[in-house]
Figure (cartoon, rainbow, N blue to C red):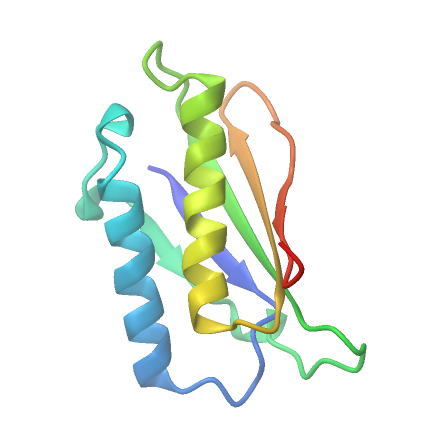
Length: 119
């Protein structure tokens, strides 16, 4: 079962905004038909211990997608699209933040996609 973890969110993020963010992330995954995933197939969580107040001049949010099984229709391009779409969802909630998304399948680790405020 794929797992999406979003870390380094600011501590003052409300429960309502986390519910909205979770829903938007699930919709982004479901829109990619090649993944053949439904919301009940995915775990989304926001580890409290990984939330922080940012001291750098730029906020950074990290999304980890883990345990995605490799299938022939889940090409490199589809995985990159997933990473980019998830990063853009977070960016829409936290427009000033730098958003990084990593994806780890059961058999490999792919590149990191970063959406910055300058992009």
